[in-house]
Length: 588
Ligand code: HEM
Image (cartoon, rainbow, N blue to C red):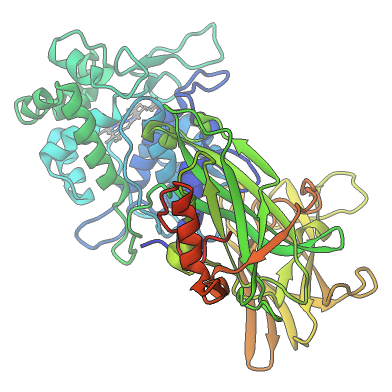
């Protein structure tokens, strides 16, 4: 079962179901709703699905090499990868990979969004693909190939004849052939700067029109009815088994479910040394952006609690969402005597369009933001949430399966609001002239601030930094940066001393694992994001109250009875059905 934190699961789940990075930059907005590109009017979802197929197509079942590994970004010059659509897709994906979400995972998520947004099935997603940093073997089919060649290519990818037919039908339900890529098939329009598209079927949607139009003879699919028979690869594939697979796909429901399973298999074709995660499913309740940090000279704890909201029902406007937490030090350590509580400082109802995948599952999100001041002498050890519909029903407690959501350390903290990034154009007349080796247009110069708790006396504060979101993916940025104490710029406060570091980065999404070494111990903040720094919108911490902890209350005697029994009796006396929350979650 899922427990928080699971950094990779959390990151993959976030991109798939929220459709965007943590700073709001949206991947799904590029493709949803079943979008056409400005200018060329190319189908973005068609381009994304073809991109995934061509990346996968280099797999070789005989030796286990190749597969969905992002190698396609180095293979775009090959005849088998003709097409402007590929370059635009590469551009679409550039900003999204990071240390936990590989480029190949982004390509898979992109294909899943593409199918979902055009009315196709929700393809199950597993993550953990590992990126290649060089081109691999060839393997993507071309329309002039004969049937034995095509059949052998699909066998090498791991698919038999019927599966080949399904894959081609499920792929060629979107998009078409364009004059710029195949002028021998589609005549260009001399009066237009844009290519002419010859669509595979009459709809842009992910439906079985490509099949039914083929079966009833009305198809205009140029790879079926083109006058140049050498190029009729769809015809050769579709009739390879006497049309029996195509006839089965003539049923719309069968088409959707066959495409769901064959495309899931296609996306899971990876080199043999890669182990994929279990399926990444939508978390009904999720903790996002939990962070202990400093904001405006105040130690704060922030988090966003995300609940799913069925799109066919109205959200309860009276609902109260409370965050509860325990001190880490002092008299009330681990909620010995009291529990801290705060209501959310803001609530946001997300558009159902947040990700086409979530939308197709019938959900959108409600986000409850919490920012609370933390007294450094007490700190925080764990937190959890209580959702009260305020309708007389028992409140629901979300506590990470019973133990609460842990704050595993408060010794070293990243401080986004004191950190800063300058984006410097390369080769301009800007006062600072930066050059980088990879022909990138921009360099980001980061000034990063960490806070170290007094008493740690670190022998070293450093971060392992990573950025793979680099234009055209020439390299992965991966290095170690040292932090030095900087009490001049940032005087110590609230029991913490500040450390700073600088680094240049040519990528778009720097992340770090921040460490403080103290004797035999190393304290770590894992997968710290730097997408929002001193431009973080400031939200004033909410009011905190404290209540007697249920654990201690349970042994307190009231009128000879244990408090807990008394509490239950009172509720029964008022006619309330007492369902009993978990011990941690309730308080009078
Ligand atoms: C026999 C195997 C295949 C051949 C010979 C083939 C060939 C082609 C050709 C020539 C195009 C036109 C590309 C352009 O004009 O830029 C195309 C487009 C496309 N192919 Fe395939 N394909 C095959 C299999 C597949 C499979 C298995 C999938 C996915 C599951 C797929 C997905 C697509 C998509 C979505 C497009 C439309 C792209 C767009 O409109 O931008 N193809 N294919």
